[in-house]
Image 1 (cartoon, rainbow, N blue to C red):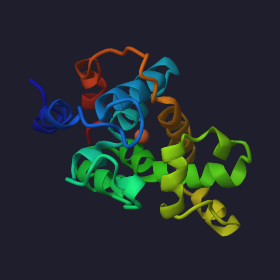
Image 2 (cartoon, rainbow, N blue to C red):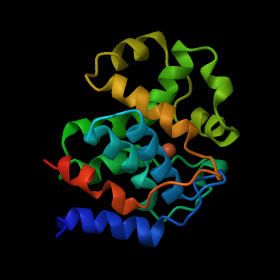
Image 3 (cartoon, protein in one colour):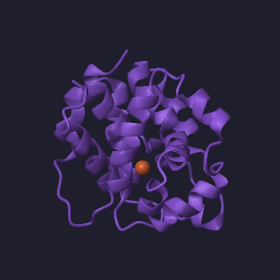
Length: 182
Ligand SMILES: [Fe+2]
């Protein structure tokens, strides 16, 4: 028997996961599964696989349109997700999820090639997510014990957008989700 929160997450993916991943060629569910699969393939901990799977769950928790970011609306999905997850999950899940947008701003500051690798929608959303981090923000970000996990997650996030990639179904990840509960 799944814990109620696990059943709730599966239901969320199954009911809202078919919406498009803002301006990309994959659905929210495909994006989540591709990110989690990359984490698993890279031997990430169960918590980081779970974070990869759930990093954009905030997009499934609001009623804004799929292309909100094209319209210049920041849905603050990372904060929404963290608030939703923190009741149930260990910080090793919650913190990388909370920081995955900041990690994009961070990577743009510390890696001059990174910005060029971003997709057009991701470049658009960067501007209203706060833009490239300042030196002070970079230093502050690096103080967070989970900043490296957030950066790693971000890199999987950025490539988990391939309409040709096939993955396991979400149920494959249930044991990893269970292992990451508080
Ligand atoms: Fe994402």
